[in-house]
Structure formats: structure tokens, C-alpha cells
Length: 133
Image (cartoon, rainbow, N blue to C red; front, side, top):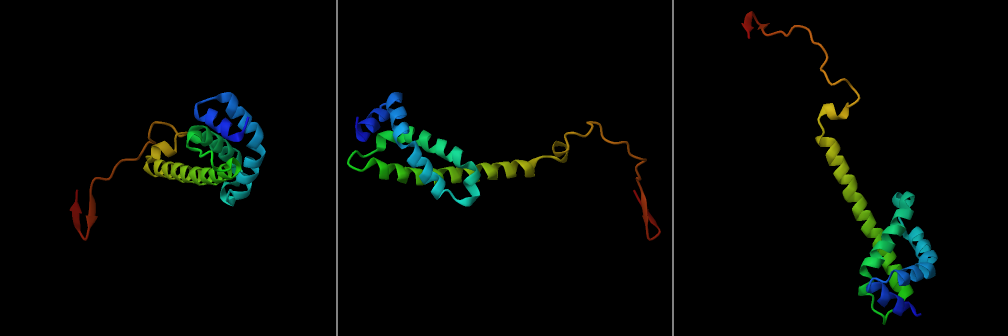
């Protein structure tokens, strides 16, 4: 079966065709993703590879059979890296926002839930001979 036929079947949701395409191209795709992934994301290369295959399955119907499949897949690999990077930036931003909006109690969740005992509260003070309450 040709690559174009496999892509057509994948676009229709055929899992066996997807498995065959994966068998044929997984090595080349993995090499390309490892090569083009920026240094700050190298620890997440396996996640990016998985992200690529999920995107390929989702967008297989958009493949133009007039184009060579290997070039199209490398182009998709580069786009998957960019897509993953954007999602990573969004996840990082959300987690930083969450940290900034937590109350101090949330940040110290291992401490006792009752506030510490305090001494008597001063209700008045004196400034230049006058007492304020």
C-alpha cells in the first residue's frame, strides 16, 4: 500500500493504516524532532514525538497526496515542536499565575490550621504626648 493510500485511510480513521504509517516513519520522525527541538525542550522530546503523532492522526485528512509524504511529515514535525512549545509556555504561565494568587495559608499547608497564640493586643499608643486609640 502506498503512503498516499495510507494517509487517505488514516483520514477516515483507520487505525491499522495509522499503525503501518507509524512503523514506516517513526524512526525518521523521531530523528527530525530530536534534531529540531530547542535545547530548553530537549528533556521533553518524547512528549513532543507523541504530540506529533496525535496531531498527525487528527489532521491526516488535510494531507495533499500530490506532495511527497516524507517532506510533509517533516514539516508537520517542526510544526508540532512549535505547537508543543506554545502549549508549554501557556502551562507555565498558568502555573505561575496560580502561585501568585494563592493565599499565604495555601503555601504553608503543612503548618497547623490554628493560628499561633498572640500576646495582648495594644489598642492605644502615644505620639508626642497625645494618646491615640
